[in-house]
Image (tube, helix red, strand yellow):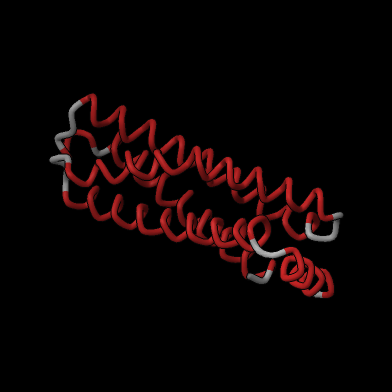
Length: 153
């Protein structure tokens, strides 16, 4: 994967996730009387939305740094990919908990927002896992050729 494609993909997906998370968070608190949500559901949605906001800000920061990291030595590039892979391992259970909200009895508009958010999270996970795979688990010759191609751009 090209580093520019990775950077653009992660930035756009993280920004969309950030906006949707803010919308779900504000909607669950401000529209509580109209959506008939229990306190447990409001807290659950709030915690998941705040986690989403934190992770999307983290991924925006990491995507901004990717342009500079690719110019460093191979050791730092691999460390960068390892940090991304650990963050993905922390982020995957959050995606399953968000999918759990689709089976709760909540308003249809909340389900549509949660489904859209879940779709964008899966796309973000795929983009980052593809980048990490290309950096860490590909043969050393292919990895060096890919990094040299990205450094020239």
